[in-house]
Length: 414
Image 1 (cartoon, helix red, strand yellow):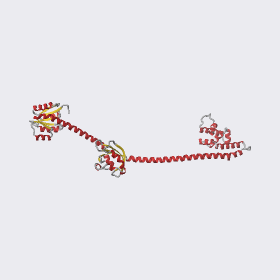
Image 2 (tube, rainbow, N blue to C red):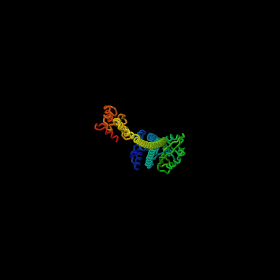
Image 3 (cartoon, rainbow, N blue to C red):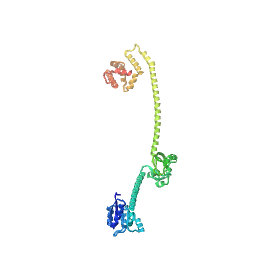
Image 4 (cartoon, rainbow, N blue to C red):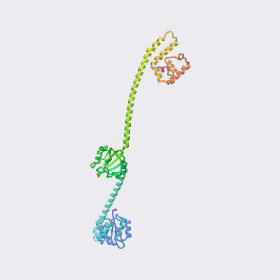
């Protein structure tokens, strides 16, 4: 409503209209008025003037108040319509009120006009506020109903006796029951698996009338109408200013199954890990025994060579041997010593690509034999000896010409 009240007056006697205006002004009302006396001017004023209240005489020469009331109910039904007439019987007044008039005032009692106008305007304000509140409530109900239906989780509203008064579509899908079978007929505890009923006692207290804090994260199992068992996570909270609670149930069956599978796999991995650790321990023990056996075998070979072979080689040495035979015996003796020394073991383990002839040449070079001596001992040409020397340097990675081959081989021995 604007700051100044708009008063439309339907009256064919100007002096009567002036008396109405004076009465309202003397009462302290701030307003602007428009006087009309015909049907056409009345209809135009409703459209152009947009009155906040209509004051109308009942009897006019070419237009009566009852017709004006009907027009106002059609074009501006929320605008109060007050009859101001010289004579109205009680039965007629009641009939006019039934037909939509807000009030009536007799012209010889205009002192009642301002209270009637104020009361009518107050009723309009109350009605407007009520309609606004109802509209807001409807919007709120639609909004929360939409949220309730589309929350993504099975949700119910239960009363203080745990009876379900409202269920959404997700709850229908979760349980397999229709709303007509649930709402007002079932308690939410009826869906809980019997073995899990002790778990929900705390949740029931959380939804009690004295609870003020939400309760969430409660896991238990429910059954549906397909004799299935589902794992759910429940959240419950009291609806403020009511004795009702809202409860949401999230289906975590697949998650629980995945957790069980993961738990089983972890147990299997632990068993496998334990088995591998045990196998690793056993392998370490076997390797240790192998090293011990190897050391014992080396000691036995060394002892046998020293006791059973080398003494007889000493006996073979004598004045009757020519120089060639003596050299061969010395080579045999050197090789036997090398067998029980790190040289050939290092040589063969580090350089597995050496040929038997290359090993022979490497041994003689280490012993300090010159190329001519090697040719005689191995019965090969000088070119062949130089070829094997070159291959040895290449396979040993000796790139510098300053590095002596015999010194390198001696370092392997040491």
